Length: 237
Image 1 (tube, rainbow, N blue to C red):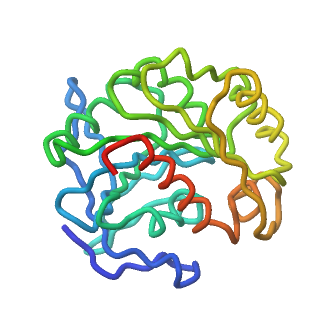
Image 2 (cartoon, rainbow, N blue to C red; image 1 turned 30 degrees about the vertical axis):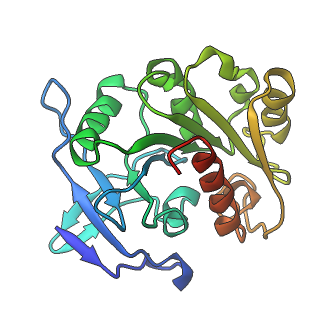
């Protein structure tokens, strides 16, 4: 099923999506379904970015009658998808997970749909526990990983261990205790990890929540533009 002109409830109009498709054809070898939300503006995107949200990481996309329903709609990655999707970029939104069979099911499904597309995995906040854990497995399976508002373990990310590309993105004013800016900076300083430091926007409420600097509130478009530029510098763009 395909929904056109769907706007996220309770969010500004600038976060309106061009369309969404709930994909249910991805399954693990054991037959477990791995549903995901596909946002695409063309039949043959050059890049597909798989999104792992923060929080509890559970998106749970499903149909409620004729309406697509899912959780974490205010999450930075979910609400910022419209700034990623264009004729070259598509996004896949799914539950965050460290299970290799689950991510492989999505990769296999995407290969059948977009055989020439470069695939990236992007996580935010607690979702970076999973992007970091999957990094060894995905080293030769996807084009790269993007870790945004990362947990403290990002300090030990050494991109030279992997054959694909690694990017760290962090807001300079992120004061969430579990995602220190200094840890992201350390990966860059110590290992030369490619790094984008964001500034500006506004911070509302809990510093660890999606509408604080932790979630790039007010600079979503600028953040996604910088990430897209980095992806395209890797080739094929």
